[in-house]
Length: 162
Image (cartoon, rainbow, N blue to C red; front, side, top):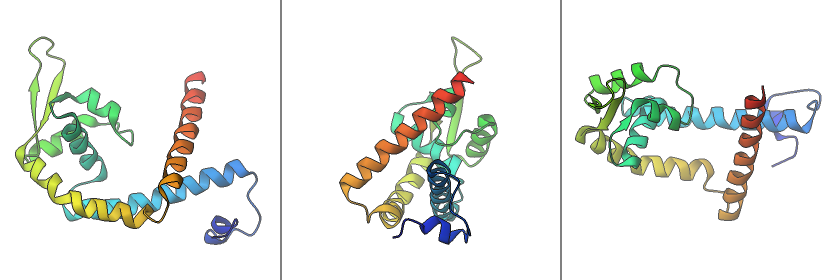
């Protein structure tokens, strides 16, 4: 792997304007490639990445969650969480129930059908993650995660500051 790998991949004639530009473009290119591969896996099971994310959030919580809480935990921001949950409900993968104390709150729960589907995806998902990034050492993976969190925190702080 060379320092100018991205420049070569993009067939860019000049060097990047700055290391920051190159780093952000590297993150975006990697994300795009990973999203494409993961999306292909989820499509085999009739899901989008966002639908899969909702199901994983619910399974991880182990109990129904308000739809806005699900939206706040999504990997990618979803502007229309209601529509996303509608589609999952139509497929019998989630159920919804209004909160009796506050009718504005809608709880979303995983169905047994969804739990079975997730179990079916688990192993191919693990294998794909291994193929995508398993060549990195444990130390490299931890460093990568730490650096990405650090980069994301900076972006969030700057967004809040306006």
